[in-house]
Length: 149
Image 1 (tube, rainbow, N blue to C red):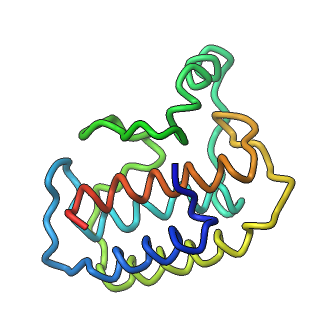
Image 2 (image 1 turned 30 degrees about the horizontal axis):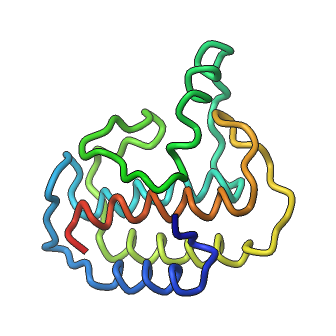
């Protein structure tokens, strides 16, 4: 799996985001392009510590643990997979504003590529730097493919 911490993957993601327009349409899912851009900001904000999530109970933590590796392995996610309620975006968003905010968060995350100690994810627990980078790339790639870029 590519990692957003790899300069080539980082540049690729930013180039793909730049291809998006206000008229880009989803090949699946319910979000429009501006909502997708806002949605993609959420996991980055969690990893950077600027968004907090409620910690799950023990049963949910165990359930999350059963598919933790799917967050960063090479197997693509299926279309229309469920989104965590904390990441659902169903209100109108400004395309240019959301595009700018996402690129800033990607830059901020990329700047952490040499970080060795990360706070545990509230739902999934500990990730290595490599796993954080792969997870963020996989999420962004999934949604950019959703919009055909």
